[in-house]
Length: 636
View 1: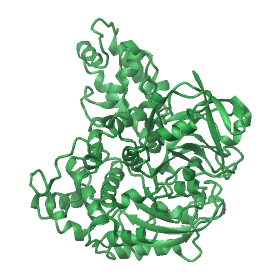
View 2: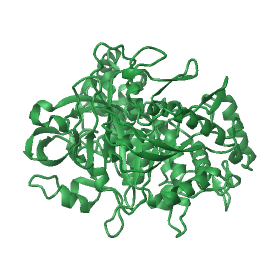
View 3: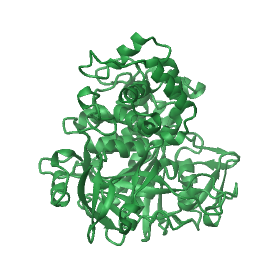
View 4: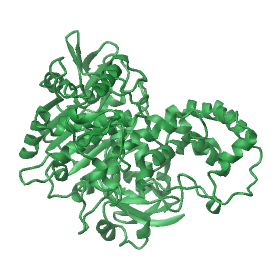
C-alpha cells in the first residue's frame, strides 16, 4: 500500500464544493434525477436543450450553470459530460436539437435525424451498450466476461461479487470515453477489474490539484489523475459536479423499519463525505469531507490540524462513484449470474477454453484445468450466495471520527443514491449550505402524470422532501408523522427523515397541481413544470443547518402531445403509439416512461427520440417550458 496525505474539510468550515465552484457562473444548480437509462436519455436531451438556449449575448445557458447534482442514471450522464477527454467534442457528444417533423425512423434525410442511428461519440450510445447484460449467448454476455476473469484469477465469488456492478458500469458507461481502461493480461495477473495500474483518481483541474494535492509531502503522482474538462487557460468548462450515493447505517433502535437506514453521501470534484448524521443513533456522525482522491482509503492517523495520512491499496475512481450512485441494479444481478453460469456449463471444454483465451494476451500455452469443475463450484456458491455480496462495499471512515485513527475504518455497503432520495436536490442543498438561490430539478421518473379519483399523482419521488409520504396502493398522500413514521404503515421510513422544504402552506400540493396543470390537466399537451419559491428547513440526516428561500423550477418527465403530434414520419409515429399502447418489451414501450429495469437497454431509436423530445421541450420557442427556463436564468 502507498501512504498519502489528504486535507479534511470539517463541517464547521466552508464547504469546498462551494469554495471552488466558479463564482462567475450564475447562482443556479441543476439536478439530474435517477432512473437508469431513461434518466440518462432524458438528461441528454435536457443538456442539449440548455446548450441550444442562448442568453442575449449568445452564450449557451448550460455554460452558466454553477452546479450539477446527479443520482443514478443521471450520474451516468453528468460524469461523462464533466470528465470525458477533450478529444470528444461537445458537438459530437451532444448533437443537435431537431424539430419533431425532422425525426425519421431508419431513414436518412439531409435536414433531419435518422433516430435509428447513433453517433460513435454521442452520450446516447450508453443505453445500447447494455444489450450485453441480457445477451443469451454467454460468449457475448458481460456477466460471463466477469465470471471468466474471476475464474482465471482464482478469486471466489464472495470476494469478487461486490465488484460486478462496477465492472458493468465501467465497461458499458465509461469505457467508450476512455474513463475505464482495464484489460486482462497474464503479464499483470494480479490486476483485477477493480484494481489495475492504469486506474485513475479524479479531481477538478490540474491547477487545483497542483495547489491542493501535489503540494503535500506525500501525494499521488500527477499521472494518476483525470480531471474535469478545462479550456486552454486551465479553467473548468463544466459546472461543479456533485454525485449522490448513500452508506448503510444502523437502524433506529426499537423501531419497526420499512427499509435499512441509509445516510446520504456526496462526492464532488474536490471532496467527498457526509455532512449529516444518523437521526436515530450516535453512530455515523459525518463531520465533513476529505479530498475526493482519499475517499474509501484506509485511515492511518491525523497528520495535522486538518490533514490525515491514509493507506491506498487502489485508486478511488469515477467507476466507483458512478457505480455506487446507480447501485440499485447490483442486487438484481444474482439471478442473471446463475443463469449465465448454467449456460456456460452447457459448452464443452474446447469452447470454454476458446472463450477464456479471449481475455488473456499471450496465453497460447496456458493450462486452465477443468473449466466445468470451476464453473460447477461457482454454481454451488451462487446457490447460497446472499445478494449482500453483490452490493458495492468499500472501506469508510468519517471526518467526525478521525480521532479514532485506524479504529474509524469500517467495511461499509454503499447504495444507489435513489434508494433514499432520487432527485439530487437534497444532496445539492447539503453541499451548498444556504449559498444557492436557484435550482432546476429534472425529475426523469417513470411514474405517469395523471389524476385518479380527484388526486393528482405527481412528484411522488420528491414528496419526502416536503415531509410527505405516498402510498402507491391507495394512491394517497399524507404527511409523515414525527420520527419518520409512515402514516400508512406505522413503520419508520428512512425517507421520513428527508424533509428539506417547509410545507405548512400546502407547498407540495401546489407543486403537484402545478405539474398537472402545465401538462394540460389530463390532455398531456405541454411539458410538466412548476416554479416555486420554497423555504429550506434544517435537516439532521443531511446536515443542513443554514436556511433560506430558494427558487425551484421543477420539471417532470411526462408525455407531450404538442411535440408528439408534430412527428411527420408515419413509421415513427406508429411505433411510438404502439409502444404506448402495448407496453412491456415492445420498442418504445411506455414512451416516455421507459421502465428503469426493463429498458436499461434501449435501441438507438428509443434513445434518440426521447432525448429529442426533451431537447425540444427545453429549447423550442413553442414550448412553455423553454420560456420558463429563459426567464429563470434571466432572474438568477
